[in-house]
Image 1 (tube, rainbow, N blue to C red):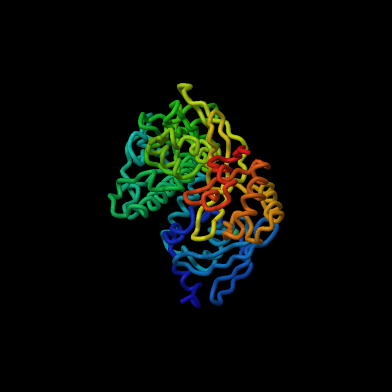
Image 2: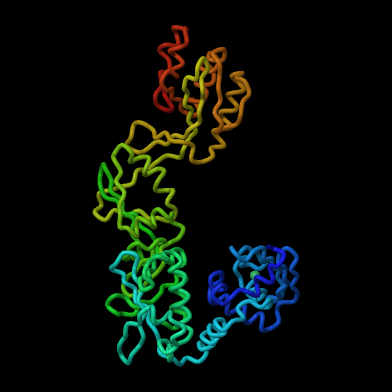
Length: 446
Ligand SMILES: [Zn+2]
């Protein structure tokens, strides 16, 4: 099948191209093919082409068309204008539909035609999208079926051609998410991660984005922050909210993930460096409940994992705990006749007697070096590097207890013993009974 890839390329319609590339890339690729920038094409078991860019030429390799697979050596690397130009030179998009689209795109340079608007139903889940056409001072609803019906030309006659093309492309993309739905029921959430880039296309085509009060909404250039609003003194309730750079709380569009927020006539994507789960929570207006027992772990591990999320306590009831730097921590459990040594990390939390012991979240190279030094000095058998667990047999318990553990504790590395892992319990030497039934790190017992 792959041997005739260029023949399949010839069969690609403009609609097929739109399934693969966005409208602007197709437009640019069209210019490239028209300017003769495709310098060579070969079709062995894949299409290989050289396309001249600005200053240098790029190598395009297309491996398959359905599903589309290919790479380009340009900075975009994938789904780029060089690929479009290659496919067009091979004869893709040669039908009337493509010419229709081209006409629509070139209409951009002749800014006649009735301007369109796109209404965002921001009060409803998923944000329904409704096209409008300008009529004097008013906006008149333009049903999606009228916009999509390309055979019945009169419904789009006189409308701005580029704007019609952008809305049609948006409609087709959204319909792919929920093809079983009514073609009139188009949601911003159907566009998923492409929602913002579609809104930018809508805006850059000169279309007006409208809120439910039919007021124009402007697209902000930068993504907005996420703030975690935390309340409570013991148990906590935390709610992620979108916030503009000036700190003003923004209203997240319901059900749209990644989150998009709206505030005072401006709309913006929410910082994408924040995990998707937080975007979902913002879109669903949901909150996190944290029991007092889990609070330290939440503060020490969950919050830092959120990246660029700022903390905020609207009622002032929450004050963040201060933690010391993590130190390596050793946890000993019984494994048959032997003992299993597992590496964890411990942090001291201000106002808490017990340290917070969790899985190793960071590399603790300095502490690992201390462990290895004293491991050797105690004459313990050489084993894998931290964080791999180690095992010691009963024959090494003496050195472990008398030399290794005290040396670690002296250097601030704590040791805890799990159930049946208490070494004093299995050791017969009576003098050790009173020693280090340690349950906390840095046990200072003599
Ligand atoms: Zn390229």
